[in-house]
Image (tube, rainbow, N blue to C red; front, side, top):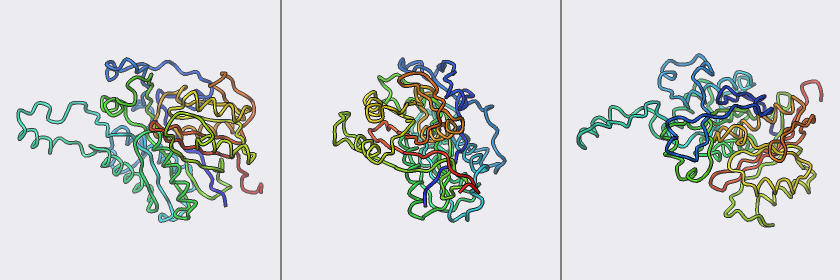
Length: 366
């Protein structure tokens, strides 16, 4: 029995959609006051509050959920509404999410910033601290609200902080199905809200790197129902690279070589995260007939949402009957990719690769 994927909702910044990503007709990103002290920030892509309408849900949840929680709730619920999750018992439904580094408070003023002494600060901080302050509370509250709303009572896991978090959420969702802990899994990720908190959290990683942060959230579903699938996961690989040298013992290179030996060479490769020239060149050398697409080059760095945007993009490409290159040449090939390799390049040298077989038979076609 295979493990299959079904497309979900991708909430993209600046009002973008999948056609914009494919065609490359995306306006230059602007900068906000938050990034003016960081000359390497080339722009910011933001989600407008008017870009989506929250589904009907508990008023308390709507009131306490901050911006990045709302993105996750919206895209997760909308993905559920078009899925087959309601046919599965709550105990067999799983939830795996990748989330941003730290909580994002819509009010940028520090807590008790004008306190005169330590005693005053402590007493006021106890009152003024937002209910979602801190990563642990953010993960718990967002995931809890989503699972309660969708009555998901089964296996779950929540990951942070970078694009790795989305890759790990996908990997653990896959193994939840494979190891029979779940029959159906809602899997996705949300980026961190761009604010002074964002730049404080990422300062070390982006210090000398041209950086285009993008707010986004995206979900897919995993299950064993071939008739309600857009693709199948054929291979999964997770490895840590301790240096950037490419040699025969490099686990990423070994994985690519194994695909060629097993006659599983991809037609389309989609990179997300910190993809270096060495990684892209290695993919070109190993799969000379494949064309490559680098999501971050088109839209910017969207953190844990990126792997799921990439999968939804691959599904959209297959449905449109095209493959897209924005790495070596900018062109669209009128040939649907039958095998797609999504490579998640983590910021801390973690690499996660997923090989997908696209296009599943619908009911009655087998």
